Length: 168
Image (cartoon, rainbow, N blue to C red; front, side, top):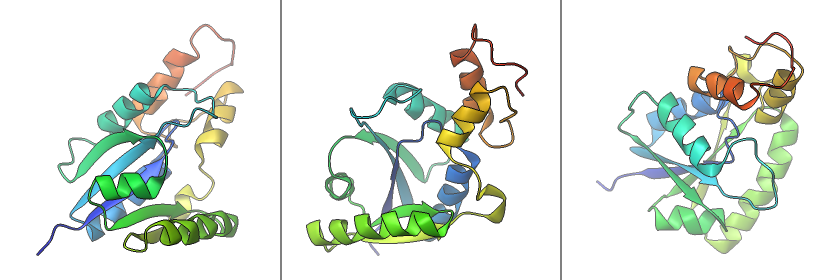
């Protein structure tokens, strides 16, 4: 039987418990999952691509079924390059679906051999997004229950010296 590989692409700036939730369930479906960290020059991420890759690796606990890579350009091209048969996308709310559905249709047009699998996040993670977490942290809110420990510590280091109130 051929190994079933999935690509889980995103910016992961930073990786969240919501991302980890989707990843854990993708690992139940596929033999191997490649996390593809997008290098997007039009965005200004908090963490560099290398920092994001390292935070993901630290959060994986050595899961042998998961690899981490980086890419720029079309997601379907990267998916093909890693041998993926599917792209995994996480959904939180219905508005996520509208945007993801449009991307899925374009990806299908570009490469009909690569399918998209949507996984709904657990209810406890519905409110979590990387951008909200960064904003809450900047304003002094607690984020430890929304990101893996490595990401929480990295955010503390990034914001060290800035006055953002009590964090934890």
